[in-house]
Length: 369
Ligand SMILES: Cc1ncc(COP(=O)(O)O)c(C=O)c1O
Image (cartoon, rainbow, N blue to C red):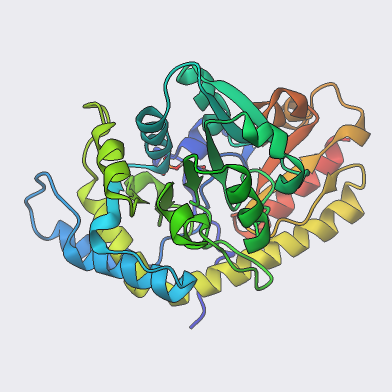
């Protein structure tokens, strides 16, 4: 039987960051997790692990490594080995570890613009110069900027626009970066619509693979971000050792439940994922129509991936769209300025929620204008 993704589950009082940030009357459509129940297969795997009452330090079981190897081959035609996988408590610690491993203060890191705030802040955090790559300009036309960068931190699929980079665009990026390292945040790689296919940049060819650190996770697709388990794929042994060495005593081992959940997700979660993606895509299409009819002053490019919609509110003529919708509509969105100083007229809306919540948010936003 198909699952009911339209069911509204009350998350208040569960320690959810999404539902704790704003007062109780605000509908939160900001941080990137979804308001759907996890796959029953994942819940069952967690219950089974809970039945064993010893929760000491843990490592990934060989089965999980093998599963990731199989998935990379099956999904992307990318052949990796079990030892290429490094487990981490999150993708965010992963790209910071990669930067720490690869770059010296004063060097330059290329990042897209707009971009997910922790990536935007990473260059300053590590005393690096930022080279900004506007997402609406093809990489082939940004070769001068890319020539100045000592490394690139790519986000594909892209947060916040939901853009999916195809093989030829990735090849242009790889060519423009010469033999310099690539850090590739591919956390949203399974959340694709309209038959789009994900291409890990490291799968282009072995020379790209050898200089790339790829970061992935079950967290976004299977809505288990709070379980804190992610992984890097680093086929180059020297690079992998440098990367792993950058833990610095700060990035610890992975949560026992996170590892169990990731294995259950990749092994048993396929049907749930397919049903969830169908629901998500219908939410996206509904949102496109709802904006057209109820909020025609807002522009949005249809996202090809993710549950994130990047809304251009310029034509509304508001001083601060995020503040406006928060205070006048009681809808909590992500502020565009978090993704880059030039994006104050944008907001990011998370449509990974039951349709009734999405519809309520749009109704409130329209009424506030
Ligand atoms: C592009 C991107 N990278 C990384 C993260 C954070 O991942 P994690 O919770 O595994 O650190 C997010 C979460 O929103 C994201 O959108």
